[in-house]
Amino acid sequence: MKYSLILTAVLLTLFLSFCAFACASAAEIRPIPVDHDTVDLSNGEFRLSVRSTGQIAKGGFFFAVLYQQDHYDAEQIKALAAGDTVYMNDLPWTVSEVVIHADGEDESVAAYEIYPVEEFYGYLAFQPREDGTFVAVIDDCAAVTLLGTVRVSLPLPDRFEYVRIAAGEEQDPLSADDLTEALKQEDAAETFTAWNTSCVFENGELVRVVHSDYPEGMDESFAGWPVPVWKFCHGLRDGLDTAVITASKTDCEAGPEPVEITPEEAESIRRMAIYGMVTKKANDESITGNTWVYSFVTPAGKYLLSVEIYQGLIVSSDGMYSFQ
Image (tube, rainbow, N blue to C red; front, side, top):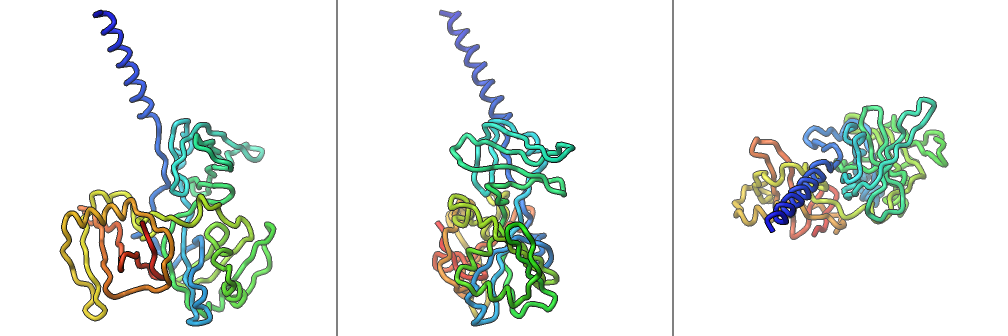
Protein backbone atom coordinates (compact mmCIF):
# COMPACT_ATOMS: atom_id res chain seq x y z
CA MET A 1 0.00 0.00 0.00
CA LYS A 2 2.77 2.34 1.01
CA TYR A 3 4.74 1.44 -2.13
CA SER A 4 1.77 2.22 -4.41
CA LEU A 5 1.30 5.62 -2.76
CA ILE A 6 4.98 6.44 -3.27
CA LEU A 7 4.81 5.33 -6.90
CA THR A 8 1.69 7.42 -7.47
CA ALA A 9 3.38 10.46 -5.93
CA VAL A 10 6.48 9.98 -8.10
CA LEU A 11 4.42 9.63 -11.29
CA LEU A 12 2.33 12.67 -10.37
CA THR A 13 5.49 14.70 -9.74
CA LEU A 14 6.94 13.66 -13.11
CA PHE A 15 3.69 14.52 -14.88
CA LEU A 16 3.47 17.95 -13.26
CA SER A 17 7.13 18.59 -14.04
CA PHE A 18 6.54 17.67 -17.67
CA CYS A 19 3.52 19.98 -17.86
CA ALA A 20 5.46 22.80 -16.26
CA PHE A 21 8.33 22.29 -18.71
CA ALA A 22 5.94 22.21 -21.68
CA CYS A 23 4.22 25.40 -20.55
CA ALA A 24 7.52 27.12 -19.86
CA SER A 25 9.00 26.14 -23.22
CA ALA A 26 6.02 27.23 -25.33
CA ALA A 27 6.43 30.83 -26.50
CA GLU A 28 3.81 33.45 -27.35
CA ILE A 29 4.92 35.62 -30.26
CA ARG A 30 3.26 38.96 -31.00
CA PRO A 31 4.19 41.86 -33.29
CA ILE A 32 6.62 44.45 -31.98
CA PRO A 33 4.36 47.06 -30.27
CA VAL A 34 3.86 50.40 -32.01
CA ASP A 35 4.51 53.42 -29.79
CA HIS A 36 1.82 55.75 -31.09
CA ASP A 37 3.29 58.64 -29.12
CA THR A 38 6.29 58.67 -31.45
CA VAL A 39 4.56 57.96 -34.79
CA ASP A 40 4.74 60.92 -37.19
CA LEU A 41 1.83 60.61 -39.63
CA SER A 42 2.96 63.71 -41.53
CA ASN A 43 6.21 62.14 -42.72
CA GLY A 44 7.06 58.67 -43.95
CA GLU A 45 5.83 55.75 -46.03
CA PHE A 46 2.66 53.97 -44.93
CA ARG A 47 0.10 51.45 -46.09
CA LEU A 48 -3.12 53.17 -47.11
CA SER A 49 -6.88 52.78 -47.26
CA VAL A 50 -9.42 55.50 -47.94
CA ARG A 51 -12.65 56.71 -46.32
CA SER A 52 -15.23 59.43 -46.97
CA THR A 53 -14.32 59.66 -50.65
CA GLY A 54 -17.82 61.02 -51.28
CA GLN A 55 -16.56 64.32 -49.86
CA ILE A 56 -14.14 64.80 -52.77
CA ALA A 57 -16.80 66.46 -54.90
CA LYS A 58 -18.56 68.15 -51.98
CA GLY A 59 -15.80 69.46 -49.78
CA GLY A 60 -12.60 68.72 -51.65
CA PHE A 61 -11.10 66.18 -49.23
CA PHE A 62 -10.94 62.53 -48.24
CA PHE A 63 -9.53 60.61 -45.29
CA ALA A 64 -6.36 58.57 -45.62
CA VAL A 65 -6.26 55.75 -43.06
CA LEU A 66 -2.61 54.90 -42.44
CA TYR A 67 -1.11 51.60 -41.37
CA GLN A 68 2.25 49.93 -41.11
CA GLN A 69 3.10 46.30 -41.62
CA ASP A 70 3.35 44.22 -38.46
CA HIS A 71 7.01 43.56 -37.64
CA TYR A 72 8.29 40.71 -35.50
CA ASP A 73 11.50 40.16 -33.55
CA ALA A 74 13.91 38.10 -35.67
CA GLU A 75 15.19 35.95 -32.81
CA GLN A 76 11.65 34.94 -31.82
CA ILE A 77 10.79 33.93 -35.39
CA LYS A 78 14.02 31.97 -35.86
CA ALA A 79 13.26 30.08 -32.64
CA LEU A 80 9.69 29.12 -33.62
CA ALA A 81 8.80 25.60 -32.52
CA ALA A 82 5.81 23.31 -32.25
CA GLY A 83 3.52 24.36 -29.42
CA ASP A 84 4.30 28.07 -29.74
CA THR A 85 1.44 30.53 -30.25
CA VAL A 86 1.86 33.23 -32.88
CA TYR A 87 -0.48 36.18 -33.38
CA MET A 88 -1.06 37.20 -36.99
CA ASN A 89 -3.55 39.96 -37.72
CA ASP A 90 -4.72 39.73 -34.06
CA LEU A 91 -5.60 36.02 -34.39
CA PRO A 92 -3.72 33.35 -32.39
CA TRP A 93 -2.35 30.27 -34.15
CA THR A 94 -0.79 27.26 -32.44
CA VAL A 95 2.26 26.04 -34.32
CA SER A 96 2.34 22.35 -35.19
CA GLU A 97 5.24 22.53 -37.67
CA VAL A 98 7.68 25.09 -39.06
CA VAL A 99 9.02 24.80 -42.63
CA ILE A 100 11.97 26.98 -43.64
CA HIS A 101 12.02 28.06 -47.28
CA ALA A 102 15.36 29.02 -48.85
CA ASP A 103 15.90 31.28 -51.85
CA GLY A 104 18.80 32.00 -54.22
CA GLU A 105 22.19 30.37 -54.66
CA ASP A 106 23.23 31.25 -51.11
CA GLU A 107 20.05 29.56 -49.86
CA SER A 108 19.19 32.52 -47.65
CA VAL A 109 15.93 32.20 -45.73
CA ALA A 110 12.97 33.43 -47.76
CA ALA A 111 10.27 32.51 -45.26
CA TYR A 112 9.43 30.62 -42.09
CA GLU A 113 6.12 28.98 -42.98
CA ILE A 114 3.99 27.70 -40.13
CA TYR A 115 1.44 24.94 -40.22
CA PRO A 116 -1.10 25.60 -37.44
CA VAL A 117 -2.92 23.13 -35.27
CA GLU A 118 -6.14 24.98 -36.10
CA GLU A 119 -7.86 24.25 -39.39
CA PHE A 120 -6.65 26.68 -42.07
CA TYR A 121 -6.58 26.40 -45.84
CA GLY A 122 -3.95 28.85 -47.00
CA TYR A 123 -0.47 30.17 -46.40
CA LEU A 124 0.89 31.53 -43.10
CA ALA A 125 4.50 32.67 -43.07
CA PHE A 126 7.05 35.13 -41.74
CA GLN A 127 9.34 36.81 -44.25
CA PRO A 128 12.57 38.73 -43.47
CA ARG A 129 12.96 42.45 -44.10
CA GLU A 130 16.04 44.59 -44.66
CA ASP A 131 15.81 46.11 -41.17
CA GLY A 132 16.39 42.68 -39.62
CA THR A 133 12.79 42.08 -38.55
CA PHE A 134 10.15 39.78 -40.04
CA VAL A 135 6.67 40.55 -41.36
CA ALA A 136 3.66 38.25 -41.19
CA VAL A 137 2.26 37.15 -44.55
CA ILE A 138 -1.17 35.60 -44.88
CA ASP A 139 -2.00 34.35 -48.38
CA ASP A 140 0.29 37.03 -49.95
CA CYS A 141 -1.09 39.83 -47.74
CA ALA A 142 1.20 41.34 -45.10
CA ALA A 143 -0.65 41.88 -41.80
CA VAL A 144 -0.84 45.56 -40.78
CA THR A 145 -1.36 47.74 -37.72
CA LEU A 146 -3.60 50.80 -37.74
CA LEU A 147 -1.67 54.02 -37.02
CA GLY A 148 -4.20 56.80 -37.52
CA THR A 149 -6.28 58.85 -39.94
CA VAL A 150 -5.20 61.95 -41.87
CA ARG A 151 -7.55 64.34 -43.66
CA VAL A 152 -6.21 65.00 -47.15
CA SER A 153 -7.33 68.31 -48.63
CA LEU A 154 -7.53 68.81 -52.37
CA PRO A 155 -5.93 69.80 -54.67
CA LEU A 156 -2.87 67.64 -54.11
CA PRO A 157 0.57 69.27 -54.49
CA ASP A 158 2.14 69.70 -57.93
CA ARG A 159 4.87 67.17 -57.12
CA PHE A 160 2.32 64.44 -56.39
CA GLU A 161 2.79 61.14 -58.23
CA TYR A 162 0.29 58.31 -58.71
CA VAL A 163 1.77 54.95 -59.73
CA ARG A 164 -0.24 51.89 -60.70
CA ILE A 165 1.09 48.33 -60.78
CA ALA A 166 -0.82 46.00 -63.10
CA ALA A 167 0.01 42.30 -63.52
CA GLY A 168 3.18 42.91 -61.53
CA GLU A 169 4.45 45.62 -63.89
CA GLU A 170 4.82 49.26 -62.84
CA GLN A 171 2.95 51.58 -65.20
CA ASP A 172 3.86 55.14 -66.20
CA PRO A 173 3.23 57.69 -63.43
CA LEU A 174 -0.22 59.31 -63.46
CA SER A 175 -1.41 62.68 -62.20
CA ALA A 176 -3.27 63.81 -59.11
CA ASP A 177 -6.42 64.19 -61.21
CA ASP A 178 -6.17 60.52 -62.18
CA LEU A 179 -6.12 59.52 -58.52
CA THR A 180 -9.00 61.84 -57.71
CA GLU A 181 -11.11 60.31 -60.46
CA ALA A 182 -10.27 56.81 -59.23
CA LEU A 183 -11.28 57.73 -55.67
CA LYS A 184 -14.64 59.01 -56.90
CA GLN A 185 -15.65 55.50 -57.97
CA GLU A 186 -18.18 53.72 -55.76
CA ASP A 187 -15.79 50.82 -55.06
CA ALA A 188 -12.83 53.02 -54.09
CA ALA A 189 -12.88 51.87 -50.46
CA GLU A 190 -12.69 48.23 -51.59
CA THR A 191 -10.11 48.98 -54.31
CA PHE A 192 -7.60 51.07 -52.34
CA THR A 193 -6.76 48.95 -49.29
CA ALA A 194 -3.85 48.56 -46.89
CA TRP A 195 -3.09 45.23 -48.58
CA ASN A 196 -2.34 46.69 -52.01
CA THR A 197 -1.75 50.44 -51.59
CA SER A 198 1.12 52.44 -50.11
CA CYS A 199 1.69 56.16 -49.82
CA VAL A 200 4.27 58.76 -48.85
CA PHE A 201 3.63 61.87 -46.76
CA GLU A 202 6.13 64.73 -46.57
CA ASN A 203 5.57 67.61 -44.18
CA GLY A 204 1.90 66.76 -43.99
CA GLU A 205 1.38 66.56 -47.75
CA LEU A 206 0.46 63.41 -49.64
CA VAL A 207 3.11 63.25 -52.38
CA ARG A 208 2.90 59.68 -53.69
CA VAL A 209 0.42 56.80 -53.94
CA VAL A 210 1.33 53.38 -55.31
CA HIS A 211 -1.60 51.07 -56.01
CA SER A 212 -1.41 47.47 -57.20
CA ASP A 213 -4.19 45.34 -58.64
CA TYR A 214 -2.97 42.44 -56.44
CA PRO A 215 -3.48 41.31 -53.77
CA GLU A 216 -7.04 42.55 -53.36
CA GLY A 217 -7.00 41.83 -49.64
CA MET A 218 -7.44 39.15 -47.03
CA ASP A 219 -10.56 37.03 -46.92
CA GLU A 220 -13.43 37.88 -44.59
CA SER A 221 -11.96 35.91 -41.69
CA PHE A 222 -8.97 38.27 -41.54
CA ALA A 223 -9.89 41.59 -43.11
CA GLY A 224 -11.82 44.58 -41.85
CA TRP A 225 -13.91 44.21 -38.73
CA PRO A 226 -13.85 43.65 -35.87
CA VAL A 227 -10.89 45.73 -34.63
CA PRO A 228 -9.80 45.82 -30.97
CA VAL A 229 -10.84 49.12 -29.35
CA TRP A 230 -7.34 49.85 -28.07
CA LYS A 231 -5.87 49.40 -31.53
CA PHE A 232 -8.64 51.37 -33.28
CA CYS A 233 -7.99 54.27 -30.89
CA HIS A 234 -4.25 54.09 -31.67
CA GLY A 235 -3.30 52.99 -28.18
CA LEU A 236 -0.91 50.53 -26.60
CA ARG A 237 -2.32 47.28 -25.21
CA ASP A 238 0.41 46.71 -22.65
CA GLY A 239 -0.21 48.68 -19.48
CA LEU A 240 -3.95 49.27 -19.85
CA ASP A 241 -4.71 46.84 -17.02
CA THR A 242 -2.93 49.06 -14.48
CA ALA A 243 -3.37 52.48 -16.12
CA VAL A 244 -4.94 55.39 -14.28
CA ILE A 245 -8.22 56.35 -15.98
CA THR A 246 -9.50 59.92 -15.99
CA ALA A 247 -12.65 61.28 -17.63
CA SER A 248 -13.73 64.59 -19.08
CA LYS A 249 -16.81 65.83 -20.90
CA THR A 250 -16.53 68.20 -23.84
CA ASP A 251 -18.86 71.15 -24.26
CA CYS A 252 -18.91 73.01 -27.57
CA GLU A 253 -18.40 76.38 -25.91
CA ALA A 254 -16.69 75.69 -22.57
CA GLY A 255 -14.40 72.93 -23.81
CA PRO A 256 -13.43 69.81 -21.86
CA GLU A 257 -14.18 69.67 -18.13
CA PRO A 258 -12.89 66.94 -15.77
CA VAL A 259 -15.57 64.58 -14.48
CA GLU A 260 -15.34 62.28 -11.48
CA ILE A 261 -15.98 58.61 -12.24
CA THR A 262 -16.45 55.77 -9.78
CA PRO A 263 -14.01 52.86 -9.58
CA GLU A 264 -16.75 50.66 -11.05
CA GLU A 265 -17.19 53.01 -14.02
CA ALA A 266 -13.43 53.12 -14.54
CA GLU A 267 -13.20 49.33 -14.59
CA SER A 268 -16.07 49.13 -17.06
CA ILE A 269 -14.24 51.51 -19.41
CA ARG A 270 -11.02 49.58 -18.86
CA ARG A 271 -12.66 46.30 -19.88
CA MET A 272 -14.17 47.96 -22.93
CA ALA A 273 -10.79 49.32 -24.03
CA ILE A 274 -8.97 46.02 -23.50
CA TYR A 275 -11.56 43.51 -24.70
CA GLY A 276 -14.05 45.54 -26.77
CA MET A 277 -14.19 45.23 -30.55
CA VAL A 278 -15.11 47.99 -33.02
CA THR A 279 -17.55 46.32 -35.41
CA LYS A 280 -18.53 48.85 -38.07
CA LYS A 281 -18.85 52.50 -39.04
CA ALA A 282 -22.18 53.93 -37.87
CA ASN A 283 -22.12 57.24 -39.76
CA ASP A 284 -19.81 59.90 -41.20
CA GLU A 285 -20.45 62.48 -38.47
CA SER A 286 -17.60 63.35 -36.12
CA ILE A 287 -19.18 64.83 -32.98
CA THR A 288 -17.16 67.39 -30.99
CA GLY A 289 -19.68 68.37 -28.30
CA ASN A 290 -21.12 66.40 -25.38
CA THR A 291 -18.58 63.64 -25.81
CA TRP A 292 -16.95 61.74 -22.97
CA VAL A 293 -13.18 61.33 -23.21
CA TYR A 294 -11.48 58.60 -21.19
CA SER A 295 -7.69 58.82 -20.92
CA PHE A 296 -5.35 56.04 -19.81
CA VAL A 297 -2.00 56.95 -18.26
CA THR A 298 0.51 54.64 -16.58
CA PRO A 299 1.43 55.28 -12.94
CA ALA A 300 4.78 56.47 -14.33
CA GLY A 301 2.98 59.09 -16.42
CA LYS A 302 3.16 57.56 -19.91
CA TYR A 303 0.08 58.20 -22.04
CA LEU A 304 -1.38 54.97 -23.44
CA LEU A 305 -4.82 55.60 -24.90
CA SER A 306 -7.69 58.05 -25.24
CA VAL A 307 -11.22 56.90 -26.07
CA GLU A 308 -13.93 59.38 -27.07
CA ILE A 309 -17.55 58.22 -26.75
CA TYR A 310 -20.87 59.81 -27.76
CA GLN A 311 -24.18 58.07 -27.06
CA GLY A 312 -22.67 54.60 -27.14
CA LEU A 313 -20.47 55.17 -30.20
CA ILE A 314 -16.73 55.69 -30.48
CA VAL A 315 -15.87 59.01 -32.11
CA SER A 316 -13.07 59.12 -34.66
CA SER A 317 -11.87 61.96 -36.87
CA ASP A 318 -13.80 60.58 -39.85
CA GLY A 319 -17.05 59.58 -38.12
CA MET A 320 -18.56 57.42 -35.38
CA TYR A 321 -18.23 53.68 -34.94
CA SER A 322 -20.18 50.91 -33.22
CA PHE A 323 -18.46 48.59 -30.76
CA GLN A 324 -19.33 45.61 -28.61
